[in-house]
Image (cartoon, rainbow, N blue to C red):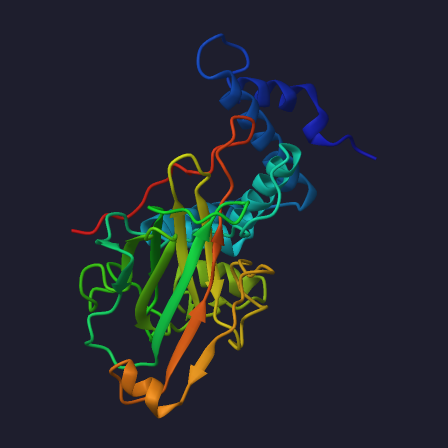
Length: 309
């Protein structure tokens, strides 16, 4: 039986040189990571007998993925963003941080700088028809004390699954707001119940998912960053109960504790009191924050975000 090529001195020397381990310049951590990545890639090529045309097809795919600006969509689709969350959960447990509102993925569609309101806000501009949603809740610490002045940064899709900025048909910052909690840590907003969305059917992410026999659908959900001075920022999202993809999210973001009850109101007096002429939905959801900790990894993730013009 022939020796594995990956174990020959020639290939070992190649990996060492490629990763810069033969010089004292550069970043030592980056060198070690690159050495592992190149080693694993070479071994994968050997183990699966990857042919040159297959390899260059993969290179072309990566190029097209970047050109389509879908890298941030594929990362959660491959479970990588969820794995990063699981690692953070584990790091916090080791630091004695447990409980509170579960975190889950940020996703690729956040836009910074949404308008800031105090206590309450309306997220939609009234131009779209859909099921009106009223959502409210409280931000508290681990002892149940209200966190006044916390910022609830909220964003979600419209009734067609599109997000403002990425969907040019929507107004600037549509369905995106930052809400500062009141003295009792409370927030409330009016919006429209969002729909789930799917990856672009002819896009690069779905192209790979098709090869894996997987769909690219997400259940309807609402994203949040919740932050306050001296507290660990929470990145999370709630899912809309009853969605067909609630427990079959292509991005693996559904977590226990993030599926609040959706209450439907058909009472005419309640409808009239809200200034509406049709039934509406209500959700109540409280966020529980941990105090900042010097012995746990930071929760504010530095990553590129789109900026609204």
